[in-house]
Length: 148
Image 1 (spheres, one colour):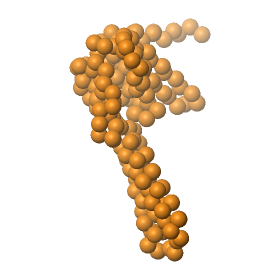
Image 2 (cartoon, rainbow, N blue to C red):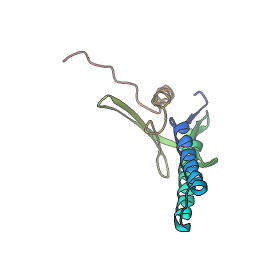
Image 3 (cartoon, rainbow, N blue to C red):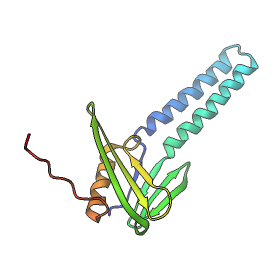
Image 4 (cartoon, rainbow, N blue to C red):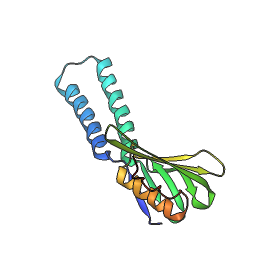
């Protein structure tokens, strides 16, 4: 299996959104006459936006020959070795022209680990599903039938 790191698809959007919130709060604090409670509310909003954005900017899944690990806030939150994997499930959908791919990895003990194109790039999740098929963790693709 190829080693790779899967990162949030819109990490740049999240980071720029946080910067815009912080810039708006700084602008209002410097150029507007605001009561103290509004200033503290804006600071609280900035801190909350920074925590939210930092999660998505630092979110990643590292796939190696040994297993998969889930990282956020620059820490390893969860790790699953391939030897501990009981089975995996793949869920693919295409609703209204929006494709989605979810891989759920079930360890022999513990909670499952989900890798989804809801946050990650669809192509990366599909490539991972192809690699998992090649390793025998997912069943082979079903042949498309041409009969109506």
